[in-house]
Image 1 (cartoon, rainbow, N blue to C red):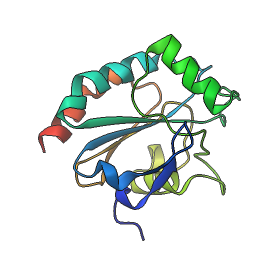
Image 2 (cartoon, one colour; image 1 turned 90 degrees about the vertical axis):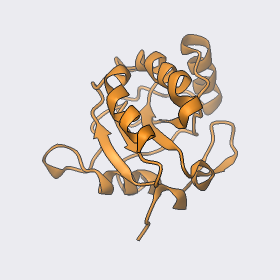
Image 3 (tube, one colour; image 1 turned 180 degrees about the horizontal axis):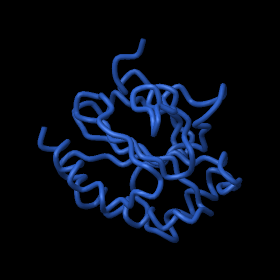
Length: 162
């Protein structure tokens, strides 16, 4: 049984293996993203959170997924370029990832198990579902896709102050 987020690794969008234990002591905002979704403009708000709170210990990490309506069909290179050019994304982006089903990345299986959604359902329903992880590596909160990044500020401030 995994005790914290620090037990996981993920592949960066550039292809490097990232050990999440490198983020020990930071607050993490983990988001499944897509480039062609109605919520795609949230990249701008996520980048603003990263810029505003990064110096205080927040790390925003995007995980592109093509599972919902095929809304992120491009290669990792295409996704990285799109995010940077259109939204100035500078926060860490991971390689395209599965978040549901038997093929789901182990990190996403763990996140969903730690904080199920409405009515206890674990499945990610759509792009831009967000998980806030505290400095201790434990999941604090799960946010719905329609929760705008700006609405997360109070929870992020509380996590940073803990």
